[in-house]
Length: 239
Image 1 (cartoon, rainbow, N blue to C red):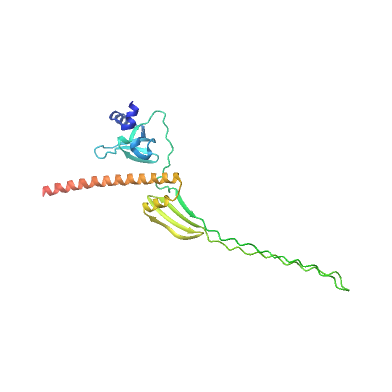
Image 2 (spheres, rainbow, N blue to C red):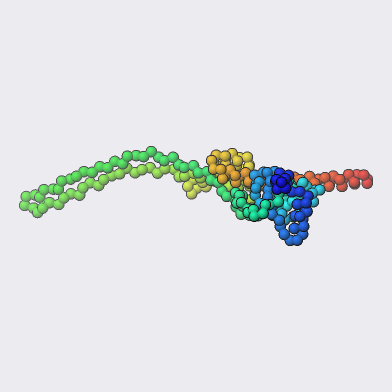
């Protein structure tokens, strides 16, 4: 019953105190992400810090892979004994380049032309009267039509690295477009053309991490703005 309650409601006050005591003792207790955490539900992480719950609802800092991200207690539950971390498709952190997704357009093969071979057999020359045996004339060499060369292959490369999506294009060894930054919405439209579930999951992980980081930055800026406004109000009252 306790395990079911934890999985649905997150960490209890008693469990949070136990985690606080474990951190004070130098340990990093394992937790499991609940359904409230979204796509990473069922994955395991390690609590590395407890911040101030008065500042943000997401005050339990969890190490997930190589990232350390804040979560709400409702996003987490105590990891069951013997649980092991499952491998999840997850983008590498900076500065390691993210996996590339290539859309390659194969060149249209040129129509085949039938080879024309012409061979003419020349009979050997008869020996002339009073002369030795005549020499045979060489046979006419066969001719073959030359197949026209098709156009060079076109390669379009979509890359995610260091928080930005870039697009580049080459044809053969010639660069048609050097890597330039595009909007995430445009990148998602291109990825939608690739019917590979693993690629879609990797992109969703990337977007989830970026969205969470943007929300954290916005929350931080709102808090700073509130402090500045409070300070300004105090100065006006003093004046």
